[in-house]
Length: 467
Image (cartoon, rainbow, N blue to C red; front, side, top):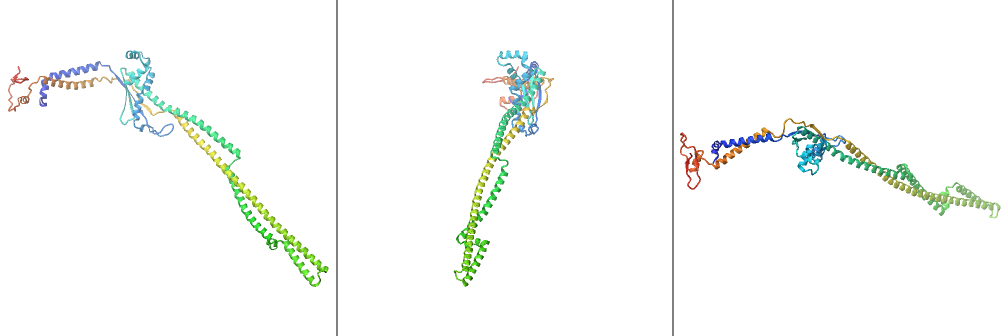
């Protein structure tokens, strides 16, 4: 059997092909008419993307994440969503469903869970490729119930999505509220330590006080340098006056010493003049000598007094130098203490600033999460609500008939070929040539006498005219 003889075979077996086709089409039509009709209602929802969150103003990147739409489909098919649909439509109060539950499970298990599983089996959630629109479809024999269940799934999913967004925000708000209270206590403690330290140290403005004390230290240091210079000069003059008081410049500059030296010179001149005229025992000579001694004694006394004055001045300068050195040392200690106090004060102020910043950050996050926890906004909107369908979705009688016709035709052809294999006949000259293994020399068209040859199998095969 070859492909060239296939039309002849089908023509000869046309009754088998047509019978098979007819039986298949009639069977499919009868089954389609007998099967219960299911109506499918579809609700369309859209996953909107506004770019920023309406509460916090932060960018929304959820729809840009891979698998986001698939995740939403899995959420819609979640058991918790189905249970909310059962409770929302009060399906657990349905007597027919109760009877079906008892017949199916014998009353074992939870009735609500059984209804939820049944709803999920008939639920169909689809999304177009590259689209944010989801189609929630539900099939049932009751078109009104199918539409109600589809809408209920969309609403339950929307409520669950809002809850999934709000609950974490509420938990975060509670956390930040507790955290803010703790940080507020830390801030109050830091401020108390700072105030107590300022009161204990008498600090109003550490920087101003430090500037004053630093200026005073600088002034005292300058005075100390000047006092040291004066003390050195005074010591030098004292040493000069003590070593050679008569030649000391400071003693020589004394007006009294100068006056007495002049008087002593005059008395010495007068004594020399009298000594030339009178003898040493003369009363005038003795009077002039006594006057010279007196003047010289006064001069020596005045020199000693000037020397003593220089020594006193040196001691005063040394004492002043010592006092200024002590004051500078004390002022240095005071400035160092103020620096230490300023550093400690800066640490306390830094603690206050750090606590304030932490409190501000926690308060800001608490405000944001509180608003998010109180917001009912989500990114899901119902585009089209399901309506009770007028025509059943299954069974599709016309489609089933067309498919049965195709299937019946193929089955008829197959049965015809099987029948041909079981009862092989010669349909053409090529079949005869192939069987006898001789070439066909010519074909003669006459009134057909032989209608077919039956093939006899065996060691001595012969071809005989069919009756």
